[in-house]
Image (cartoon, rainbow, N blue to C red; front, side, top):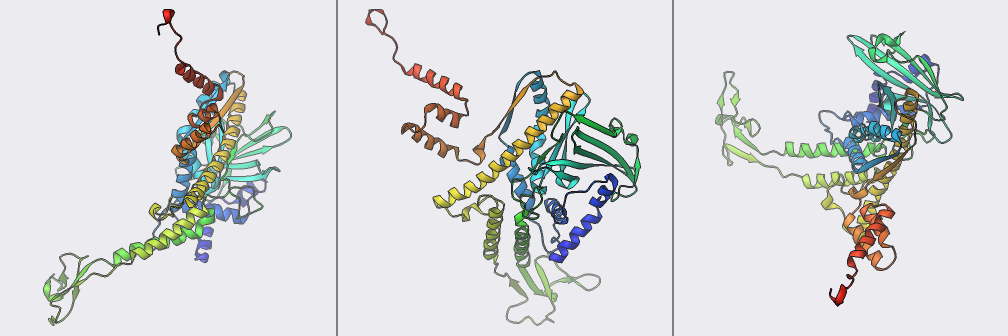
Length: 469
């Protein structure tokens, strides 16, 4: 199986523009080890349901897409972003909110493939963002914090029988951010071919071959990666797939699932009958009324004790196979930082309070770390959008502030937390204002004002003249 996976990865390399080709074209080294490059291609293939072990006998459970999709859903479904400040803030908000409907899907790609670059650019009188997956960009250098400081992006187009590729190189220098664009034409999508002018493609015609953006100290693109240690190449600052530690287990699950399918297929009820029980076609072959149910036996007319028909209904072993599959799914959940019952059968999960708490905390930690990494990347993206807004004069100069709210109600039992916080208020451990901030998502000044309103309503009314109330 390992040899088959290696052959599979070699075939993937043969079908893509290699690192050496990019290095030769731009005269810059690509900072991706062979181990990381191979892993990136394998993670992408698994997400696209093209695992090297799949064949006519081994079917897919499509677990990689399910894992990435579940984490992306939990991390983004309740996300809210608020801009405050000047007219510049209003403009940036209007541009950023156009990305929100597609953000969850792009985060899923980033989680599956180990990373995602968000690269803003000016499109007329507005801003747009390119989402570049981990298998579509080539990091060149990193700073001391592991942040990408130079990178090559590839943009490919097909026109007729010709393939066009644009390489966009970003590099931080003492002067600022240097950007270079070069276009190539080839008769094969696996090679760059010959260099051609940028205006060979209409969308590239307005691009400058070289430009330097001064006055900035970080790249005009944001890199989001899954916050898990890189156990493929510990020296690489690149991210890994959210299922990178479960690849072998995913293969085992696919095999076990296929065993279950075969158990049902091979255990289908059948009726064996002597060929004399059926009519015949022109070639003298028996005509079966139902090919999946009936089987013909040439008994030569010797019926025997069981008669002309014999029913065959084997006993199935699905319970044993399902238990085995469920055990594998639990190991996958553990390796991917998911709570038991996310992929496995929830009814088979242990119900002790300690185990439930530990399981939920695992998902909570994974999703919370993912949200922190996403927020950091989005803050960098908004900064880059602000820079391009200034360069192109798309909005008046001004300040902006951004706040992110990742409501964790999807992964936290809100009812339980509410009751726990209520008891803390009753015991005088937390204030009523803190209770409202935690449970009603109010700002502290709003929470205190609401409490004052409630207290005012609870005071007895002042007595009227004459002692009447």
